[in-house]
Length: 286
Image 1 (tube, one colour):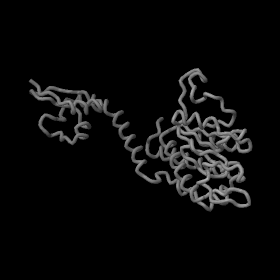
Image 2 (image 1 turned 90 degrees about the vertical axis):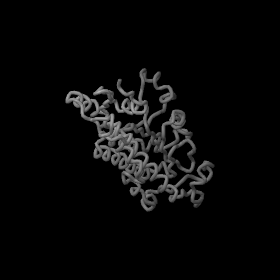
Image 3 (image 1 turned 90 degrees about the horizontal axis):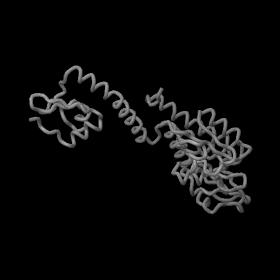
């Protein structure tokens, strides 16, 4: 009578999709080298022999090949999380460059949002000045997160309702082969997407707001929709904006053309860096 296969070993074999169990001279011979290796077993141990017939070896190899590639892809993607700056995007941002791009300019003191007070350096001639030291760290984290989304093949959506900078936002999305929405936001675009589009729709994995307010200087409706569906967001928040629902808020000027161009260039470099690394690590599917 053959020895019973333990439950843990059977689950390991099932996990790796190796279900070839052979009876040989009254003992159980399991053709599951990957599962045995994961549990620390040696193929030469009693009751576990890797010597099977050529037919069963070819069948196991054919079945293991796609799974082994998937496991390898997961390992490569997981290693990227162990690095502080896997894509080298943190060096793209400097305080000097942000100062030259006028990132530190806020709005008048009377328009200040109370939740933006911690991000302000002070006030100069009635104009709020944003603390670029805080912006530096927050911007680096946002770029790093954006690169990770691109690295994993996620969908990125650029949003803005600022008329003067709409063309740059749309052009940036086009250059990185992603999406943009710079027009009126229709209610339920995210929360009721199946009814809106008539089919099951994949929502974006990240929303980047170059301007977090609409034309009436109220919070963009997509920010609330994203928060409801747990879609991460990156947003430029000026001194008159509410940063509470933004996953990665970036304190900075959001309406000066040269500043928005600076933001677009940084996001473009971060996304392209993530996609380039994806190809180099062999995660890009044909």
